[in-house]
Length: 383
Image (cartoon, rainbow, N blue to C red; front, side, top):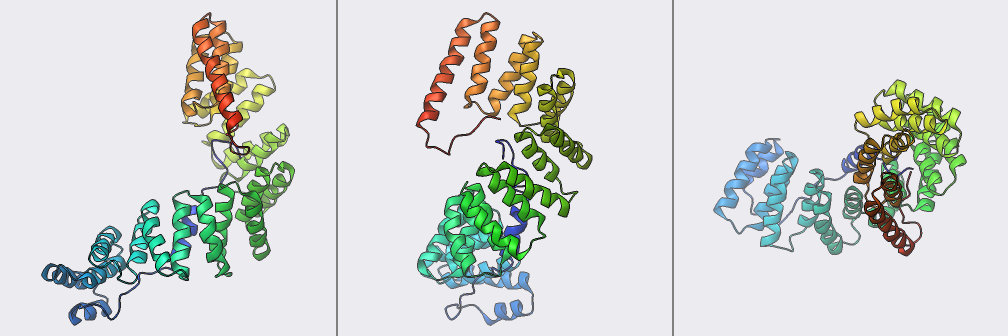
């Protein structure tokens, strides 16, 4: 969707990762541990804290016992003390790099802390040691997704989802990875599969709509969002997403109605306020536009469009110093967009500062040249 926020795109990420993680558990090292029977008995009784204390005592007594550190890590993981567990796993790996399961356990402990980037290296090591491990493949794909390495995530998640056709959650993470990587054919294929499994999923209709919009099929995207709205009329951000698509298609009456519905659900939705202001400006009602746009910025909007529109209205009203300050706010949000520098240049010309104007126009030329060298499909469009 547009550059500052995509409707609902991140909403489902965390629940999906947690749903898949429920299937992943630490690996116990069998047959190599010199762990005392006391610790094993305590664990079997569910006395994990006491078992951990025994293992700590064992590691203090025999600090070169890799299996003891490994066993300690497993018990700590079961207590959800993932930071301490990760430290124990690292010690076990340092003492015995070939101890089975430790890289996988370390990756899982890092992932459960939300340390997605840190989880990737041990999980790659685990997969190299066992290329057929579905658990390592799945967790590595999820880690890449969490670390926003979406293209790499696709590679692993495609393998993992193929080995677990029944996991709708895993297919959704794969589909979203395709969407975030702007691989829209891949995203559409996965979302279509999910729609066949559950035609009444509002989320799948939303994501399918985003993928269609990414391919420039705005009208088809609108159809998907309308279907989602029928299934979940009070879903936060859904009316905004539909309104955005109407706005993009220049269907302003429908867009206004959708944005107003969104504000009934979330009166502080800065995106809806911004686009209502933009429509009011396009309809030559600057005071109404400023009411919406100023409220959006007062509430902390990070959408450049709000600041660009306010500045355009202020320039028309000859309020040049305030317009300049507002354009500088837009520039802070994304200094690499040529449009804001062009507008700054024009404003400096109006204000009689030709030196500052030329500096801005020079920046416009630099950015345009950079855009011309950027591979097609990777530019960041302005609103």
